[in-house]
Image 1 (spheres, rainbow, N blue to C red):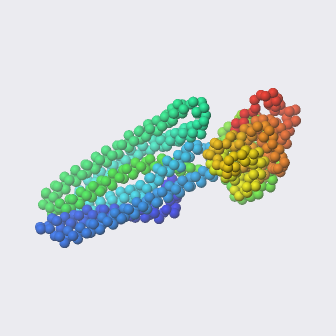
Image 2 (cartoon, one colour):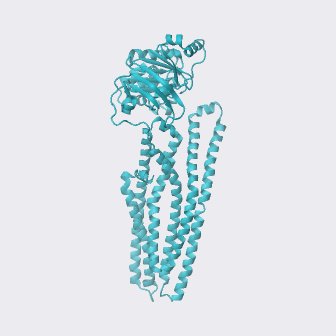
Length: 587
């Protein structure tokens, strides 16, 4: 875990190395000052009449050491800040790019709120721990080593007092960390839950207000927030024992040092230890004990950061289960599609519920294929196998006569345009959204695609036309307008296969018919899959697939299905009489 995360330091490695060097110099000079103070006392102040030359000599050296130590401290602050901020930037960069590589099944494993929490709060925790490690984690041990060295030089007998305190502190810290770490792991999972509540509430704020459910949402948030509070209180209650433990050891050591030092001075008559050496010894004792105090605080922070680091590593080490083959095919010949004994189930290994079973289809390039079926019949699951958004768990899907698993993923997906059930527009102008289909599309190409999608009319009526700004999620356009913009975006790709997953449900029947007519006339060589609730939307398709419980119940033209398929005939008759449509939810 540490090795994987440390790899994100990269170009900031120089700063990460310089910071501990400056810390080491600062520590050495800080520890040297008490030693020089003892010399100033013994050779300059405590001699009969005082020796001004020695006082001036050691005074200037001490002042010089203090100035250099200050400069080293400032340099350490600058380098450690740059190293930690750069490290966090790289860590977020690597995590975000890793998420972009995920397949749908990888994304299903992590919730959106959890990924956001890991990219923000968890990275911040790791960043703070990293800065602490290259500063305090270096400073405290070095200060202890330097202070112990000078303490041994002054009086090795008294120094053993500090060494005796180390095992007590180590055992105490180990027990505290082992108890607190599992709690922090739970805390961050509860942060995910809190963010999920917030995200869900904000996404559905219009529904919340329409049904006057503000109080209910407040209670949900309060419950999630209370869970975090309770867990944090438990963790902090455990960690609160750290300071009393440190204070006990610190004051006990100080009392013993004073008592033993006084005994030695009195018994030896000042020959074994002088007032100056005792003064410097006490300075070293303070530095030593403060170092232990800081070290204990570092371990507390690392305990928190460890839980965050593990969550960050889960993102970084997750491997997409959809990978390019060793020698990928980089050209899609045509839009023909073939399903051969296909079965599919959700889950990393497909060992969950089977959504599709025994799917066998042959579709020629340029055909229009309608797909209808009830809720849970796996209509969306079927078409998502074509651009390899998921991999089949049995059988194979072929596009242009080649198994989709043999294609370069980018090549395959550039040849397939998909308008998903949940139409997504991004904040930016209409042109910027449309150019997702083709980055270098000209204005003429954009207008032509919008005319095919029956979107040019309402776009031209907008005050800024194609430069109209789209709010986040497309909240300033209607559902039908959003669908037509998304269809135009897909058409700009000039795909070999076009998939419309219930993408005209929010438009009127006349507009729906105009879109289908434009498809027939303008893109006759593109294979078109149309998932629809209304049979009128697929009635004139070359072939229609009727799905029922993940299996093909019927496949043929409208007339053939009216004659041979009971499900199709019943739905058609119910819609002709004004009955309910098939539900268009994702199967």
